[in-house]
Image (tube, rainbow, N blue to C red; front, side, top):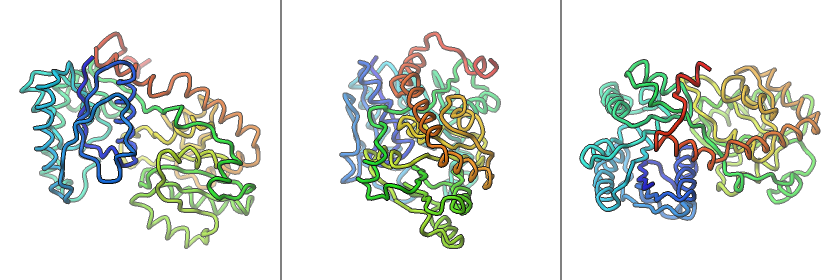
Amino acid sequence: MNILVYCDEELGVAGGGSRQVVEFVRSLAARGHGVRVVAPKPRAGTEKAISLGDAHPVWVWVLRLPVLRPLLYLLASAVALCLAMWREKPEIILWFDSPGQIAPLWCARVMRCPYVLFVNGLPEEELTGLWGWAPIRGLVQQALRVSAQQAQAVVSVCREVPQWMQREWGVEPARCRVIRNGVDPLACVPRDKAEARRCLGLSPDRPYIGFVGGFFPWHGLDTLVEAMALVRLEHPDATLLLVGDGQTKPALEALVRRQGLEEAVSFVGRVPFDDVSWWIGASDLCVVLHRPVRFYPGDSMKLWEYLACARPVVATAGEGYGDLVEALGAGVSVKADDVRGLAKALCGLIQNPAAASKMGQSGRHAVLGAHTWDARAVELERVLGMGSVEPLHERVCA
């Protein structure tokens, strides 16, 4: 199939959105599809972080100015997309939605080409600052409504988003699909703990608890920091590795100082994606928490990376998080914002390394069996061709 992919993600910058685009593109190209990608031209120095396999990029120059950047990319990408469609004659557009970026809607109408729309968030929940101003947010929401109603299919990593579109916008259930995030098991591989710690300059003996990802309100990292105070009562040398960065970092650093946990919490910062498996491998266990600040839970990419790296996971109870790791035998779940319950779960795995190791192996086995990006690409192929696949409402009610 000849596929044209459109996105507004900075593909050279580490993040869940960019990783999703890159991995789907690589997997579809590896499966023999002709794939061309329309995306922002990478910033200087980030090109090496982008590996699109056999897919071919169409880089769109964009001036990265506050407020103006989305408008400039909208116009520039519309021109680039139409030219690519005229040259390549794609059978379908795979559109990874960003708020307000409706170039594929325009071009699909002009060139009479169907599109599949990926939506992992809604403007009402995602837009902030000037773009969160009610009139602008309303226009963006209206554009998304039209785009969803005219799409061949709407895909999301969680069922709540397409269900909302069915209920509020009348999008037919038969055109709604859920495709979870996945993982590349060749990039996220189990590392020898001793070797990982030696390479990263960490102590060989102390317990390490790992978190890798963005620092956002819905990740509940303040609960994790508070739990560390209790963990240290039983394991005085236990250390939390916070690998990443984000908007809640200043508040977390202040919390660490108030709790007197400067020696217990290490802010590692952002690391290249190739180093992620080493930091996970250096950890005895890893944590993924979810706080419901939005009505949709999303799908944590870090969870799949932890599992692929064969580390046991402590996750917030709920669909796609704690329920998943317990069903896979790959970890334990805790109630949201339960500091004592979280500390107990962390100490339990630290004190039982044999059980923790068994959970890690179960997670790796589950990933290899059904949760790789190649497996997700197979699901997406069915959506692109609208082959035999269960509608969303049938799966939810099953």
